[in-house]
Picture 1: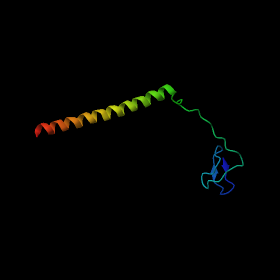
Picture 2: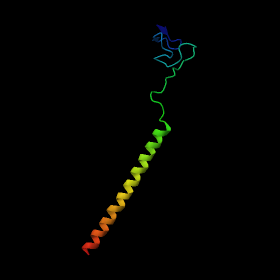
Picture 3: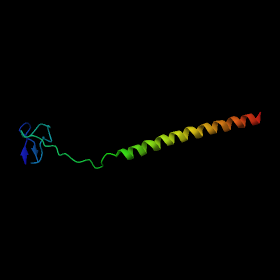
Picture 4: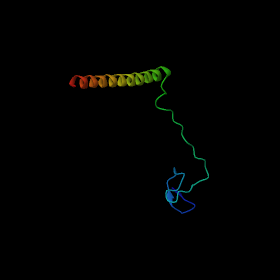
Length: 80
């Protein structure tokens, strides 16, 4: 167990900062562990496929929206 030199709180040996006052327990550098990313970034082919699907979806959405408007216009003309 390690005692904090600032507030005399008892901390574990692995602690770098005091659990009570938050000040550094020892004058040692903190090592940050670097972790590898879990998923590699998408390749250019994957990215192009995703963009192509999005563009195709938008085009299909607007083309069907135009068809439904013309259908409504035809229905109104037939009623008159």
